[in-house]
Image (cartoon, rainbow, N blue to C red; front, side):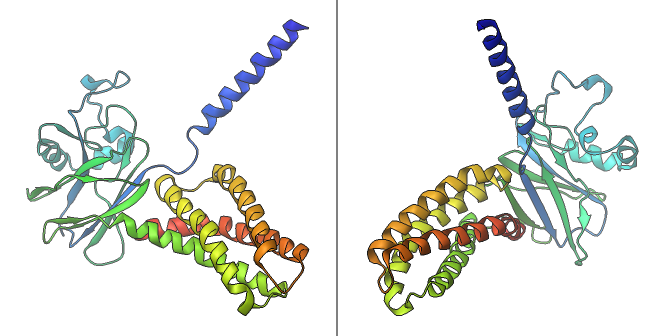
Length: 304
């Protein structure tokens, strides 16, 4: 009996560990989009620099010429790169830094686009860099075919996915203010909630004139706090299916708290009706909020 129980526990633990390993790589990953305005008309390469001298990891064979290029390009694509321009880019890397794509990260992998891709807008190109090796502190290095090389000042990433704009004409770099993304995410979460719960309030027969004060005070405290917390969480961590495990219990608690407050402060209908309204309104707003959470986050990320 004890032996069987021991085997069952070991089997359960093994399955749990395997499940955790499988989920370790799920969910949104770090991403940085570099927007180049007034981009060089000639061929150029752009790379992110991270602090520290590049050293090949034990799995990498430095003697065979291994570099971060192998993470990002097939052998055919790598052979098509301008080797002189690539060498010039590497030579321009200052001491104490290393080029994440042209040299490598030496550890966690990162994907990047040296040449970027066209946006359809004149003079504008986008370069995307991402995955777990994306540095928090970075510098942008641009090298052109004619030998024009510029190294931009250090920048920092404070959220999971963000963007930065480089103006090649003025040799300047601009990082969008992160606080604006938090404000926009909060408003996009809170306002639809107020709208749907206000509509349900009227459908339950409550007078807006009599109910608006307790309704607004209750929601601005409960849903306002939830919107702020949701904003911080999503901007910093992104949105994935496992977010439900965090938000659903919180939504249940808020639904019960609001229903209790409505029973006490809403007038014009029975207490049972007020409680039913609280539950119904929160279910509706939770379904709406969770359904728009990911697209809203993606939209905000694309802006900032």
